[in-house]
Image (cartoon, rainbow, N blue to C red; front, top):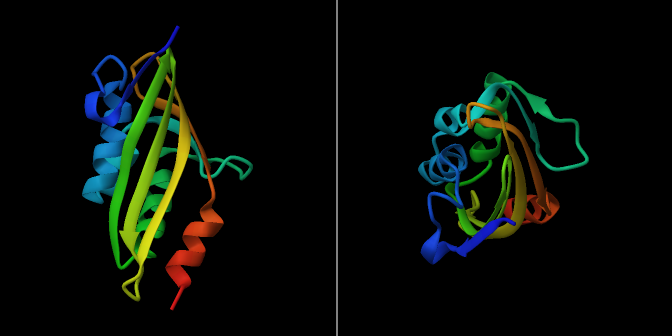
Length: 139
């Protein structure tokens, strides 16, 4: 049975180190650290249904492009974590500001699969990226 806790009480047990780094790096806007949470050959399905981006360099480039679309990117805040090793599912909320100054808010769930070293082997994002794009392009 997996563990779950809300953001007020995420335990180290519920949030593996690589997953915690994934979210912390997002809030810092640090694409390199964000990508470093992945295994060297990790895959990022962003979103599910699209071909995955593979490898840290490609993942970092994807993150850099995504962040560049914001006037200010505040990152992702974990809301709830469920763990069943080596799998972790995290519901989260994202926030930022569009280039024109409008609020950008969204939410989703990311399913993580960790490798034997505890790094992210696969991350699958379930979320409505079209809504984010619409908020970013709103005038």
